[in-house]
Length: 623
Image 1 (cartoon, one colour):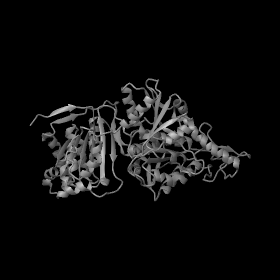
Image 2 (tube, rainbow, N blue to C red):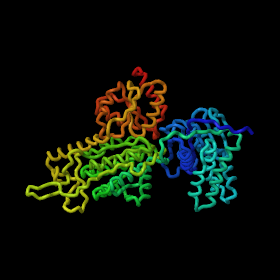
Image 3 (cartoon, helix red, strand yellow):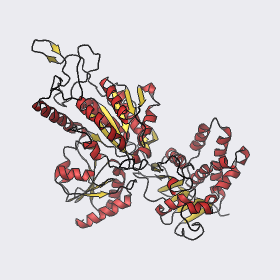
Image 4 (cartoon, rainbow, N blue to C red):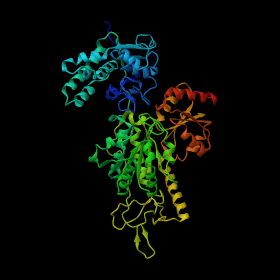
């Protein structure tokens, strides 16, 4: 047997794929955690069907998990896997076309039976017919090797075979020098009350590692060194978890109880799940009977002096729209989290999209403006949640926070803030009457406004002397009594819009990355397009091209200088996972010919796709 060698590489993209019951999400998550412990930078892309359990072995039932780990900064989970672990023919058929030419494909040969091949649409076995000649293929009977490794624990063959995902994880952990202690500790903890299952999974994991160590087919292992990072304490975090933590941190900074009223919906449900664990931090979660009740309960919590939050996805925003209009009229702090997914209707529940922007801006009856904020990465969901809370409280308004399925389920390293890093947020509750009547008495007017922000006072019910009425019927300016006066309605509509416009006071200037300062082409994005756009721009600059990149966190109102930024460049390109919603808004608002680059495939952009598109634009503008 030849001596083992180790080859140093700067990054690797790995995809685990199999049937929905094969544990691919768990396997990918453990490989990710091992890489995070090792100190690599990383980004992940879980991809799974919406069906609870699609027919076993079918294309519809394939679940995958992709992760890029690197010794440098990572902004995306990678375009093409360098390694694909395919647990059955369906997983191979769905994913093989994405693998980089010359990449590695590892298959579990036990599953490549005539029946399973037919289910996947193969007429012959691709492992044997030469159709995978462009790849390095490792056919391994992972199921049999796993069953043999766990035989001593007395499990039936079916239960024993279920540990094959740990065999695959052990093999990949050996190939890329991942630390195994965290995975072994995880297995011991997860199956602490099931000794036979615990020991079987440990044995399968070690068997996979040992197979890589001893099999001649794997004469080379790879080393991806830790990435340089700012000093601090890090953890791997998904967007939904980061968002939940951001809401808690902001509520604590404001000294408020946090109330979440929500109805479970993919891919937002994990926010409810996470917040439900933290009652000790003043968090109350309410799983409502429907989306409308969730929103109305959150509004009631805000009326009572708590931080009201409601979370959902696009279909739920439709149902909440009347309640959101009520929140606009009441002028109460409220955070509305929309984790976007593919639509319309039920659409693609587990896939990502950016198609709710126009709904967030205009999806209510009447003139009902509200600020809209969008995080740019999974870790950035924390800071975006804090910002949304700050705006909601300061301006007494509902705020829409637009995440998406890619950010929600994906993960990356996140530097844990230190105690005291979060500035305090003053809820500024009203404590005394604010108006003197004609007879010299003191009264409380619920729509008397703070001059700088136009925010009305927030009075907690039960505060002596601050009895007041608010509601969905139009109120008179200042005093808050019901008013049908035409001029008053016009004033109130314009005032609510002006209040939202004044959010520009806190959102700052447009973020622009233009190192040379002489670019003719600007690419502008929002939300989760940040990673692929930023990486595409970096690649182009390494080729000697000059390109500028702008990214928007605030989508309503836009930054005050956005029009000026757009007019600096002879061409503006806007990549979006929709059919051009931001492009349309920018054209209408600033009369700039923004060129859309759009896709709605349920997946994030690939870097190469954006790079190629921008190269074409650069050639057309003569740079």
